[in-house]
Length: 310
Image: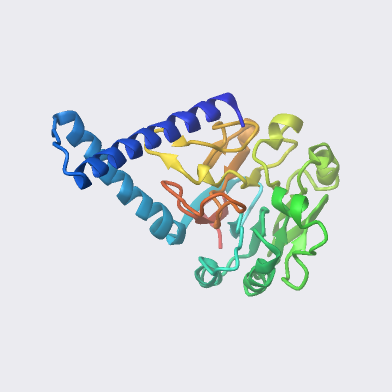
């Protein structure tokens, strides 16, 4: 965690702690029927506390289930006639409890994508593996389903074979071609901690093909370079999972901090990086909350630059 994120977390947590302590003392005084003075400062703190309670309700009970579908148009001269619909899902972090999984399947299948890509972090516990596999296996794409692992997958479930029987093909150091008519795109990927292999993965992909590269952590291009990739797709950050208006993510757990925390980023040579907020929430002892960081499904409409396309 970077220093600025540590400071942000300390300030945020400290502010919440001070307000809670003040309200607790006020409540005790009320119970003991001690004289209370309501100044402007006290009323402001009460208002902040009330807004905090509403925010907590949103973070625990509303936003984690408020799934957003984000559409992004990308035009390229590497396509001549056909357009492609690519759906990205990321960071499902399935728990035993069902949250967005059923809705995700309905939404994605209604989109009728050419391909679906998953950019890592499958489950928070082995008890959730059946739910994860059931969810992925019911997703439908006309030309393929592709995946890479995330840090949770390689840290905690290296022997779980998480993609078996899901219909997803794991692209750890490989690429696949997705075709529509005479047009085609390449989807490649790597599992975490192998950025040095990226040029080898792309070495055999023709230069004139639109290239999508899957890597769980955002920012691989800063270590290796763009290498002819047109669209990098990542996750991991969850949009901070807890963010503030006008500031964004409080904590990203990314080596690049807030530089790549959410959304589409233009890179050199016309390339782009997209960082998904993901669908689920961090596991372990971390509270299952989202605030100003809704779960999302991302739909990429990759189109030729000319107007005549299917």
